[in-house]
Image (cartoon, rainbow, N blue to C red; front, side, top):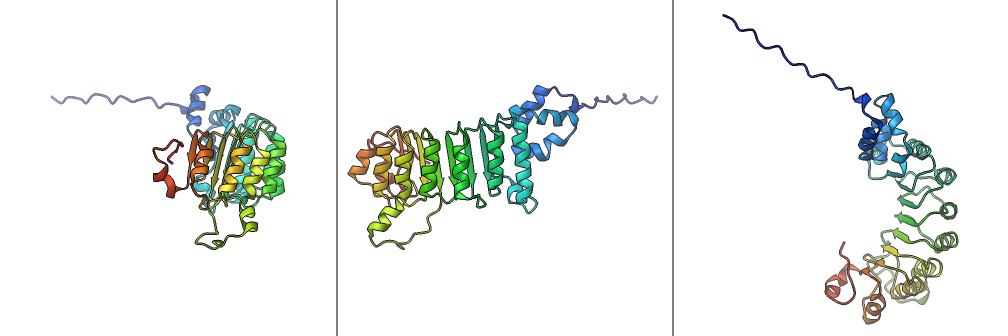
Amino acid sequence: MDVEPSPLIVTPVRDWSELPLDALSTIFMKLGTIEILMGGGLVCRSWLQAAKSPELWRFVDMTHHKMVFSTKGSRDTLCAMAIVAIDRSDGQMESFSAQLFVTSELLDYIVSRANSLKSVHLTNCCFLWTHKLGRFACKCPLLEEIELSHQKMLPELIRHIGSGHPKLKHLRISLPSIYLNGVHSEYDESWEHMKNEEAFAIAESLHELRFLRMEGRFLSNDGVYAIIKGCPRLEFLDMTKCSDVVLNNKLRACCAKIKHVLFPKRYRSLVHGSSCPLVTS
């Protein structure tokens, strides 16, 4: 007698378009800005509606994505995507991070649409004019944090930022030094002053700084002394890649009141265990 096989149990297909809005928002929160714009928000109408929630766009990060480095990711395309993200934030965007593609026109658009901006991080944005960047900073009234990586940072720009945001708390400027291997090994007073111009501008303009990272900048002990004197509230100072800084007793004493200090790497073993705090990267 043949035994008939049991009928297969068919699992009902789940309709992902019917997920509640809060669940979709939680999923989208785990995606990056570009992923939402290129994928998650395009699945269906309900997902698109969820992707337009202003809450998702409070922190816009368009860095370290293959689209940024791809030939498909043209400057115009990425700027257009950034504009969509800014529009969807409905004025609630608090942080904007971007790499390579940012233009002065995009900064102007951010100023016109993002009244809540507190933090901006720009990496390798070579299409920006210095005066435009300074004007942008001054037109963002809530701005507390600026990070510029691989970006030319002029003393005039720092002073411009300081005039508009004297209470700026976080500044990071990063640029690999091109003057290495003793190109400027001969002591020269004019060069000594010139390489500390950024430090002097910071000391003159940004007295409320709490966090300062000077990566690969031209900076000597005189610049460090000026910063410490001009920024009495400083809690974190990174001069890891500042090759002209020389650790001596005077510098150690000046840095003693700062909670966290990163000295140039060649001094790390000498500082370890001393009374002057050291943060390891």
